Structures are given as structure tokens and as C-alpha cells.
Image 1: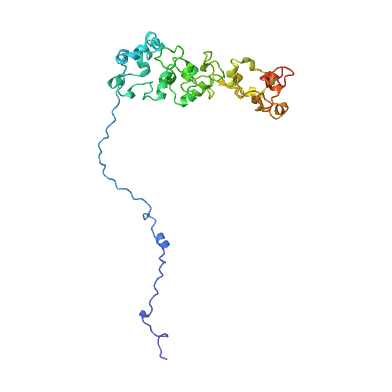
Image 2 (image 1 turned 120 degrees about the vertical axis):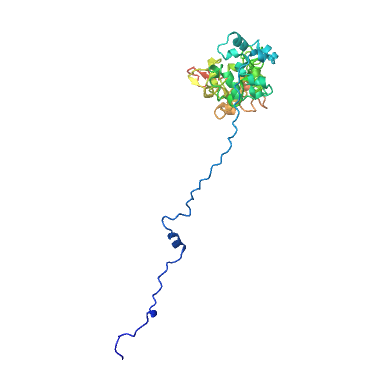
Length: 344
């Protein structure tokens, strides 16, 4: 073996270094390769300021001219017939002879508002406050004109009453130009006729055999109801039906030693307030009315049957020309110590 280097000489080219390991080219590596300060893909770009383009100013709405009062003479130059009717009314006497405010001194325009715009264009019904059927004035605004003077008192519950909720206007029941309504300036000749314009069913009830003496002129709708509002849905003048009835029927009020529960609950359990085809405004004939509750115990179930009635096939003599109240006379309540069954 030859002497010299212990290992055979190798050329440098024989020692080629291995290539450096490359990171995997996955999508996650690509996401991580973004520099912290590099813009994110979801970061919105700042808008480049643009030169503002001047736009012409939008035309401003023309302000409506101030309406002014024109005076009663101007109104009467066209509305002669209305002026004639107006002269004989209560409003005319107050507004012309004894106005309490500056507004009332404006006469026609106290209610209809300043008339200058109406004089310029009489065909435009929106320029004047009107109370006729063809009126373009909202009902709330019409009523607001009336309530300017007629607020409070019986009208304290007008707002949200059944009449107000149904968009009823003051002019539907009242006519300030009338000469025949001595009480309340009603739209018809009487309060009752005014109410019957809408309440047709109640009008028919008053024509039944047994009825309140309203058509005879001895009673009016407003004896029981307040058409301008109440704490009750039927616009009663008291807090309950019974309190209204007890105004006249005080002997039925009590208190009684023995109370009849249906009576204390409501008079309407047995009676129809406007009219009925049965005696004493009853909802059904006696004893049928009583049997609506008293049909399971004692004699009502065995004696008071359809066959035993006077009109039945085998009428019982005890039921001919008699009724439950033949014995139970104090049916509304009794103060007798032995009146537990209302027999005394």
C-alpha cells in the first residue's frame, strides 16, 4: 500500500450538499406567510376623496299665506240663507250680542276659522272648516272646534267613548243653525229622533207591547244615557245598569234581609230596558223566565211543565191566571223574617 494520505483524495465536487428542506406549500402556510403589517384581504380600502360637485338647491316649498278674518258681512254676501237661519239661534245671540271672548266676536269665523283663503277660492273645501256631510275637514278637527267652548261637564268622557271611537261628529247630532231644537240644538226635532237616526233596533223595541213611555213623550234617551261619554260602554248616566234603574225604581234598591241574587247582579237578567212583548218588560213570560234558573228542585220541575201550562194539552188549574209571583210576591228582595223564599 502506498504511503501518504490515509484516505484517497476526493474531489470537492463529489461532496454536493443536500438541498435545504422546503416548507410544505399548503394553503395554511400561505395564510401564515402574511406579514403582520400587510393589508388584510377583508380590510376596506380608504376611499379616495373626490371633488365635490355643487348641486343646485332644491326649490323650497312655498309657505301658505296667513289666513285672516274677513268679517260677518263678507260671509253673508254669499250665504244669505245660512245667515237668516243663524240670526235666530242661541249661538248668534251670544256671539253678536254678548261675546265672551275675542274669538266669539268673529261670529261665523269663530267656528269656521279665518275665511280669507275660502273667499279667494270658494271651490276648495279644504280652506274652511265645514261641518256638513260633504265636509273635507277631519271629524277630530270639527269636534275640536266645538270643544273649544263646550269642554268639560257632561263631555268630560267624550274622548275614547263609543261615539268618539266610531268617528261621530258633533254635527251628526247637533245643528247650531237649527231653530226648532230648543234643547241641545239637536239635528232632528227631538233628542229621541236624533238618536233613532242610528239606533234603529232600539227604536223598534220601543214599539213592542210592553215598553218604556218614550214614544209617548214621557221619557227621553238622555234620561238613562249620556251620549257625550260615560264610564260605561252603553254610555249610562250611572256606573251600572242597576244604579240607572234605581233612579226611578227606588223601592227595588234595598238593602234587603233576603237578597235575590239575579236582582243584585243586574236588572237585565230579567228585564229588557227598552221594550218587550211580555209584561213588565220581562225577557220571557212567567214562569218560563223563573225556570231558566229554578228547574231542578221542588215543584218547578214537576208542576211547571209545558203540558200543565194554560196553553198545554192538560192545563193545571193552579197555573191558570197565576205565576210564580202569586206566591213569591217580593221577588226583588224581602225584609220579612220569614221571607227567605220571597213569599212576604
